[in-house]
Image 1 (cartoon, rainbow, N blue to C red):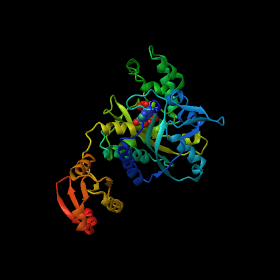
Image 2: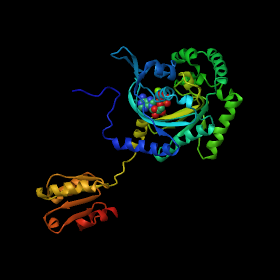
Image 3: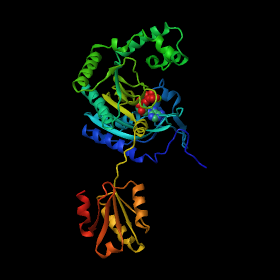
Image 4: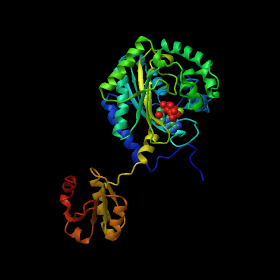
Length: 410
Ligand code: ATP
Ligand code: MG
């Protein structure tokens, strides 16, 4: 028996939930001026090594990388931003100037140890805004995230931080490295990170490391004037617009390309604290990948983690749609045609088998349908159909000529 690969899942029972989540995300981002973008799922490996960063966990150990039949070093995308930035530069939008905003959704691939909320193929919804320097856009990106989670009814804590810029971050890193080198007892991962990416030490999950880091210098106390001003303004905009947040100076995010604003929405509904949506500003990435310097800010949301949370709630048992059936084989053609017609405006399940009324009613109930329509000998003679509302029990014969008007009024 051939089975799906480890860490890869079919969306087979929760298709509506997946689509519902994407629909809400789309609705909200469209109103903020974002447009749909789709980029290839396979890219040159070097794109991710450069953008996500050699010191990140993703590039270090999670890449689905292989040599294709033409000898090209390629990689399934582990995240969405790199491909969008590559496309943005390839189509010369960095030279055109102006503001461009994109949203995307689809599969991402990371070779991680599969566990709850952690898959090898998973789905993200993400947004990227290019060309906007104003910190108001950082606020908007955060607010879009907050609004999506709010509409989906998901309670989260928003954590924000500033990662400084090209000027203050290196100075801060030097201070931090000095401090880290003075410590005794950091874990192996942290010791490795001191050389490769010292700020990642700050979010080590190891409790012992966290204790040692209690007096570490913090980026928030080492920002230059511009970064401090933007960070203060961001906090002010969020406060003025009723977005609750916590400043977490140890929030560094997994990817290497962030500058200034970084944020995460954390939920405690799927086991231990876990990020459902994260993002920030990345003003250097376009230039770093060979384009013109372009301001940029965005986020990515993990759709499966959202689905987990929503599935753990009690499912709504609201009845929906029409069950259409006949009592005799000779009426099947008739109801088949009627079904096609009704489907222009309604959700209809047509049953192709002649059964007795009790069996049909049971099927309609099993399918959680709201309206039962059935054609039998008597109804047919009078140009009628038997109507039953399975929600409130209303039961009557309707003239077929009035049927659509009647259903539309419900
Ligand atoms: P984590 O710290 O949990 O590994 P991350 O920092 O690697 O997360 P991002 O790269 O910021 O995650 O991706 C954005 C979102 O995508 C995460 O907040 C999470 O909801 C989701 N996500 C990331 N990795 C996975 C995975 N392997 N399986 C399912 N969802 C994931
Ligand atoms: Mg990760």
